[in-house]
Amino acid sequence: MRAGELLGRTAYDLHGRRLGRVVDVVVRGGLPHGRLRLTDVIVTGHWWGRLVGRLIGAERHPSGPWAIRLVARALSRSTRQLPADQVQLLPPVPDFPFGRPDG
Image (cartoon, rainbow, N blue to C red; front, side, top):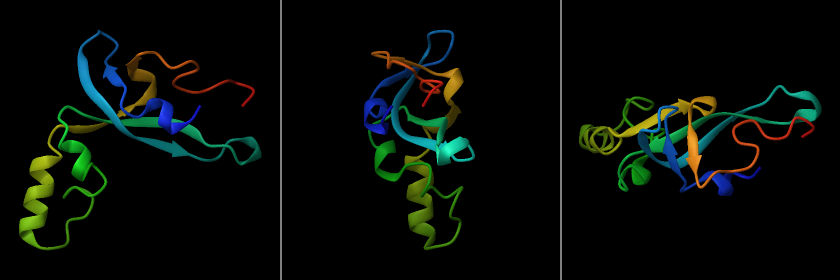
Protein backbone atom coordinates (compact mmCIF):
# COMPACT_ATOMS: atom_id res chain seq x y z
CA MET A 1 0.00 0.00 0.00
CA ARG A 2 1.28 3.48 -0.87
CA ALA A 3 0.59 6.70 1.00
CA GLY A 4 -0.82 8.20 -2.21
CA GLU A 5 -3.63 5.64 -2.11
CA LEU A 6 -4.75 7.01 1.27
CA LEU A 7 -4.24 10.75 0.91
CA GLY A 8 -7.38 12.68 0.08
CA ARG A 9 -9.76 9.87 1.03
CA THR A 10 -12.73 10.69 3.20
CA ALA A 11 -12.28 9.24 6.70
CA TYR A 12 -15.09 8.03 8.96
CA ASP A 13 -15.02 6.70 12.49
CA LEU A 14 -16.20 3.19 13.29
CA HIS A 15 -19.75 4.49 13.85
CA GLY A 16 -19.95 6.06 10.40
CA ARG A 17 -19.44 9.71 11.44
CA ARG A 18 -17.41 11.80 8.99
CA LEU A 19 -14.04 12.89 10.38
CA GLY A 20 -12.64 14.69 7.33
CA ARG A 21 -9.98 13.93 4.73
CA VAL A 22 -6.69 12.10 5.18
CA VAL A 23 -3.83 14.57 4.72
CA ASP A 24 -0.88 12.54 6.05
CA VAL A 25 0.08 9.16 7.47
CA VAL A 26 2.31 8.06 10.35
CA VAL A 27 4.47 4.95 9.96
CA ARG A 28 6.80 3.25 12.39
CA GLY A 29 9.58 0.75 11.85
CA GLY A 30 10.52 -2.35 13.78
CA LEU A 31 8.99 -5.00 11.55
CA PRO A 32 11.10 -7.81 10.06
CA HIS A 33 13.16 -7.00 6.97
CA GLY A 34 13.12 -3.27 7.80
CA ARG A 35 9.49 -2.82 6.81
CA LEU A 36 7.35 0.01 8.05
CA ARG A 37 3.89 -0.27 9.60
CA LEU A 38 1.11 2.28 9.19
CA THR A 39 0.01 3.25 12.69
CA ASP A 40 -1.93 6.52 12.44
CA VAL A 41 -3.59 8.78 9.92
CA ILE A 42 -3.78 12.56 10.14
CA VAL A 43 -7.24 13.81 9.28
CA THR A 44 -8.45 17.37 8.82
CA GLY A 45 -12.00 18.61 8.69
CA HIS A 46 -11.27 21.70 6.59
CA TRP A 47 -9.22 22.30 3.46
CA TRP A 48 -6.97 24.86 5.14
CA GLY A 49 -5.86 22.28 7.69
CA ARG A 50 -3.72 20.78 4.95
CA LEU A 51 -1.77 24.01 4.66
CA VAL A 52 -0.39 23.97 8.16
CA GLY A 53 -0.95 20.41 9.31
CA ARG A 54 -0.44 18.93 12.74
CA LEU A 55 3.32 18.58 12.45
CA ILE A 56 4.04 22.29 12.16
CA GLY A 57 1.28 23.39 14.49
CA ALA A 58 2.01 25.19 17.71
CA GLU A 59 1.58 21.98 19.74
CA ARG A 60 4.66 20.40 18.13
CA HIS A 61 6.92 23.45 17.69
CA PRO A 62 6.24 26.03 20.39
CA SER A 63 9.13 28.27 19.36
CA GLY A 64 9.02 30.96 16.71
CA PRO A 65 7.22 34.25 16.26
CA TRP A 66 4.01 34.50 18.27
CA ALA A 67 1.95 35.48 15.20
CA ILE A 68 2.98 32.36 13.29
CA ARG A 69 2.22 30.17 16.33
CA LEU A 70 -1.20 31.78 16.64
CA VAL A 71 -2.06 31.25 12.96
CA ALA A 72 -0.75 27.66 13.03
CA ARG A 73 -2.87 26.87 16.08
CA ALA A 74 -5.98 28.37 14.50
CA LEU A 75 -5.52 26.55 11.19
CA SER A 76 -4.76 23.18 12.75
CA ARG A 77 -7.74 23.11 15.15
CA SER A 78 -9.64 20.63 13.02
CA THR A 79 -6.58 18.42 12.39
CA ARG A 80 -6.34 15.18 14.39
CA GLN A 81 -4.04 12.18 14.50
CA LEU A 82 -6.07 8.99 14.82
CA PRO A 83 -5.09 5.31 15.10
CA ALA A 84 -5.42 3.68 11.68
CA ASP A 85 -7.45 0.77 13.03
CA GLN A 86 -10.17 3.17 14.21
CA VAL A 87 -10.73 4.82 10.82
CA GLN A 88 -12.73 3.69 7.79
CA LEU A 89 -11.95 5.17 4.38
CA LEU A 90 -14.21 5.86 1.42
CA PRO A 91 -13.64 4.76 -1.20
CA PRO A 92 -12.17 1.76 0.60
CA VAL A 93 -8.50 0.85 0.19
CA PRO A 94 -7.64 -2.86 -0.01
CA ASP A 95 -5.53 -4.06 2.94
CA PHE A 96 -6.10 -0.88 4.98
CA PRO A 97 -4.99 -0.27 7.73
CA PHE A 98 -2.13 -2.72 8.12
CA GLY A 99 -1.42 -4.04 4.62
CA ARG A 100 -0.98 -7.64 3.59
CA PRO A 101 0.46 -9.92 6.27
CA ASP A 102 3.12 -11.23 3.87
CA GLY A 103 4.32 -7.69 3.10
